[in-house]
Amino acid sequence: MTLAGSMVPGVAAAVGGVVVLRLSWGRSARNSVLNLIGWGMLAIAAVLAWIEAGAWGTSIAALFAMGAALLALGFAAWRSPPARRTASNRRARMLPEGGEPLRIMQRIVTFLLVVVVAMVAAIAFAITVRRVALFMGASEANANVLALFATPLMWAMLAFVLLMTRKRTRQFALLSGVLVLALPATLAGAAP
Image (tube, rainbow, N blue to C red; front, side):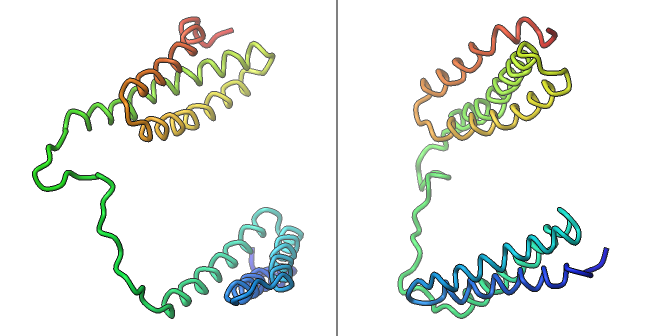
């Protein structure tokens, strides 16, 4: 499919909307009229692109808008003066300083908890989701989709919480809680 029909005006409206928003946001004072015009042009671009080519057309118009935003922000970054002070050299305890111990075992345990144990807990949770969906009357396919959706979502949430929790006891408690809640459905199996 080529850029034809209402795609050309849609793409032009998308790029124009980004340009208007960049001009509006570049001012020292807020300009509601320019903001409204810019967002309106982006909405019009989405509608025109959808009319011409559906979701594909909207994604093409969005790509042009993102490209225009990349160019506008790149130009603004290139023009901006350097900072008056240097960036902080502080690290987030990624690596040990000078003579500090490497704490290899703590790092390995953290890796195993976040990657292996959290994945097992996420799979157990997904089995529970599948079992509950089947119990509530969902079809086999829908229950499987829910389980496949729940696994990475739960794993990501567990990984985030585990990495943000400083105490090992809380990490173990969290993982144990998820595993205990999922235990009945896991032991019973996924079949109804």
